[in-house]
Image 1 (cartoon, rainbow, N blue to C red):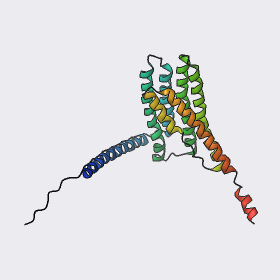
Image 2 (cartoon, rainbow, N blue to C red):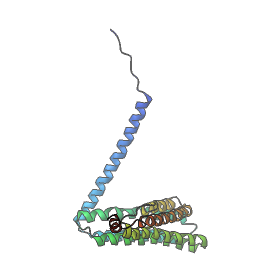
Image 3 (cartoon, rainbow, N blue to C red):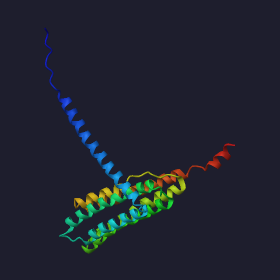
Image 4 (cartoon, one colour):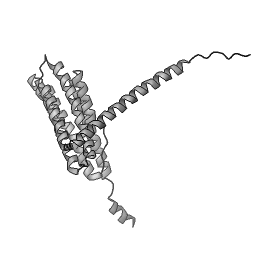
Length: 233
């Protein structure tokens, strides 16, 4: 009777098993985080808390991070910047839940969206204001100017989008928006590498503003629909 040869697992099957195992762990972690977030949102919805209060709490937490930045000295910079980075990560919790709580409690309003946008601008400015104070206290004039420029550039990125969308409907071009800025500031704080982070934000924010200006200019060169219809007739 013929005996079939023994089969040995191939290296590819081993790596495939590891890959699927990693995917299962990451997907399980993602599902667990989603369940936890949904549970928190339900609790907040049951408490009938106003979503605008959650939005404002995000500003309060970001102000805490700004105070940590501004209070740092040369000897305490690494420690306090690391704390500030953790605080900014915590502030992201309020960005995650305020909109979801608004939808869960049927409190989605145009004013809520407006309020959220305004508070986000103050939150961004507070972080850079804290850094500005830190560099000013350390007599680092160049980085005071750079931080001020970054603060203005961050606001202009949001302003150019808002102004453009009042003219052309949508202007989502460009890279350096608020999520990217937050990630960079968090990395700069946690790893005490804020100076190069400010340079990156300054350059990419400026390029984003220029990109949006050019995009809006291109879109506004199109003839209005009524004029096109009249010309065709």
